[in-house]
Length: 347
Image (cartoon, rainbow, N blue to C red; front, side, top):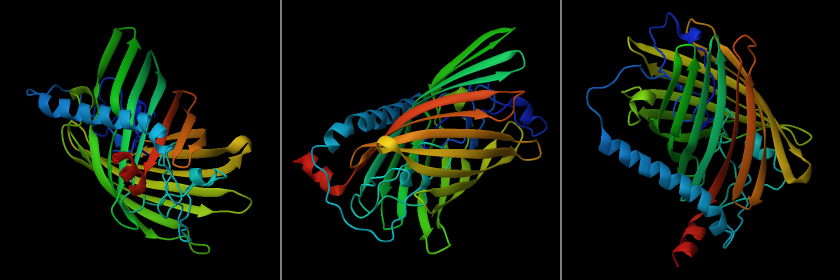
């Protein structure tokens, strides 16, 4: 799901959980954790060196993702058949599924759901994007902008990848009768892995597990100030007539002012190829703070392969709760660098 797009979460859903939402932006369904809510307090001691280093890393990843498509078209890697490689719901929607070093191209973005496959050994994949959202609550309107949303994936085995992710740079503005509040800064980042534990076989879908740990290196306004673990299970299944389906089951232990809270989320996504070399998907997902209701989101988007290993996307989504509407629009790019391409660029 990731990595990462901002979704919506109404404040009233957290009442009684001992979690005070951070003033300004809140991260929902991002790739770092399922839900991340920082305490609305100011730490006595800043970590400027760590924050500056994290900011430079995010800038470098985002810049590399934007600059690499031009390099990727200079030397396409050799195609190697992979009979056991199964596409993700979004990847399967693209009619021409390029392969890089033994695996069909697939990206974690767009959408909440994520593919059930890992990038091949020695392959680096960079994903990045921009998200704008509007969250309308009684007497308050919140505007959020996320720039970067970097995800770095590195294959270390036939079924395992290492991951570094974060929301990137975040800007928020709250408008209420009491005035306007603004905040900006980098988000927390996360490290993790994805392990494909089951290949698609007959009626059985492909399944992958994804443990993650959020690192508190972000700006005070967007950080939990502690380590927050998460675990995800992704599945994907090829259907008939060019359709595919997939979903995500996620659990995240987030930190509030008083205690940790278990957040849960699950999704269902269906994808299909569209005219003009496009791929489309339709998705619904649910986020549930324990014991305090839930929110439902509908999300749809399109993808397009520009080169053998470069994909661009755009998506829109909205809550299914009319009394507290929230909508978002996002776009991004995913680029895969194979070992052969990296050797060519170095010469």
